[in-house]
Image (cartoon, rainbow, N blue to C red; front, side):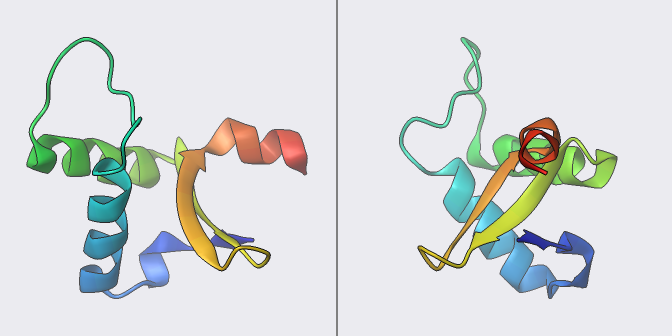
Amino acid sequence: MIIPWQELEAETLDNLIGEFVSRDGTDYGEQEFSQAQKVAQVRAALARGEAVLIFSECSGQCNIVPADQVRDWE
């Protein structure tokens, strides 16, 4: 299910994004970015509608995915 990120408390959203960008295997290309830069990039992608926050009822976990991947499932 898609979670409207705008409805989350700021601290909760910050924690979710921070956890997401710190995962092993999160690819940002060949250029290195700081944690703060990665968080800003993800937050901007959410604001532009290019990424969405999803919650899996099966696993009980949240994830951030490209919006076009979610549209493909609908």
